[in-house]
Length: 261
Image 1 (cartoon, rainbow, N blue to C red):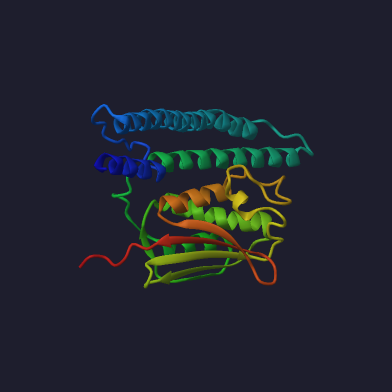
Image 2 (cartoon, one colour):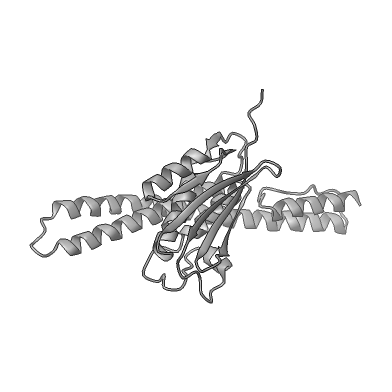
């Protein structure tokens, strides 16, 4: 049964996200046929996924140039009296498209970047407090450090704050609490908005999904990217109902532990 056990481990590794996982093919019996079939299927899936990632990354890069030209042209065209409102709306639309491109590029980079062995230590407390100060939201934070992508973690925090502003009437409070016993940390953003109504909170983490009353705001990528960043760092993101109304957006992440002596 040794070859069957190797095939099982290969299937588990592939299911866990290692698209390069393959199993050894030995002999000419049914077990060898099974291993070869798995390798062929895994190769096709890996090729399809990589092609999709390259398409998203290339398309996002190509959008940069026309967006930049639109922004420059908008500032150079003289505005007639009374047209200021239309100019402001156009600038908001360009900013939204620019943010969407940033989200697509970041998501594509995280998908392609599987080896996290060289991730530096990030002072999560300083990062959260900086973003909260920028948004004018009170924050209560423990000292927390973890290994990760500082740019991605900053986007995670800003997306949570932006989501609370767009759909929850503004973040009421933010907390960052460490549990040394479990080696985990919880980041929570609380609001007093309408919540998600009859919608499935899990569905709100799907790309381009929008909650009740959200059809006119945002791209639908904010929470999807939050979960992608959390999982990239070995954590998870979820939405919780809040007593008295409102929502708690919670992200759980592993800490880096103490620095070696």
